Amino acid sequence: MSMQTYIYLLRLPERLYDPECWTEEEKTIVSRHFSYLKKNVESGVVILAGRTEQTDETGFGIVIFLARNESEAERFMNNDPAVLSEIMTGELSPYRLALMNEKFSIGV
Image (cartoon, rainbow, N blue to C red; front, side, top):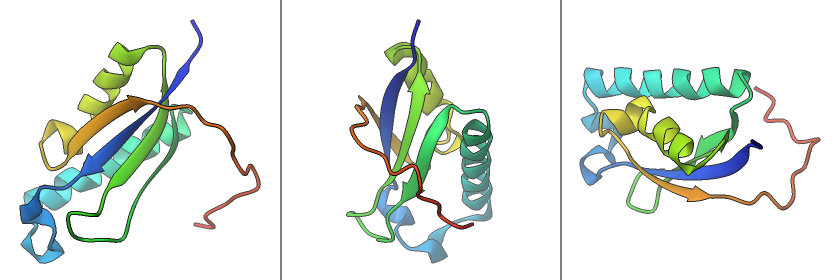
């Protein structure tokens, strides 16, 4: 079965818009979220992940990734530590990649 592309949108609850309000536990969970995504970038599952700079209701993160089907995609999103711990909400959609600049590099 061929791999399909999916995207999930991540949003913080209002109480976490201000980074000063984050508990140590929430910071640890977000660190695990980053590690989860990084591991899946390295394994070829995640195509890209990032977030906007806004720290209010307009801010969001995205993860574009590969899965065999919607059930597997939903499982992947729900196993993201930030979604699993309800630090962020996740909204899943099938995604069709139309264009990609293969020369792009974030230079990190």
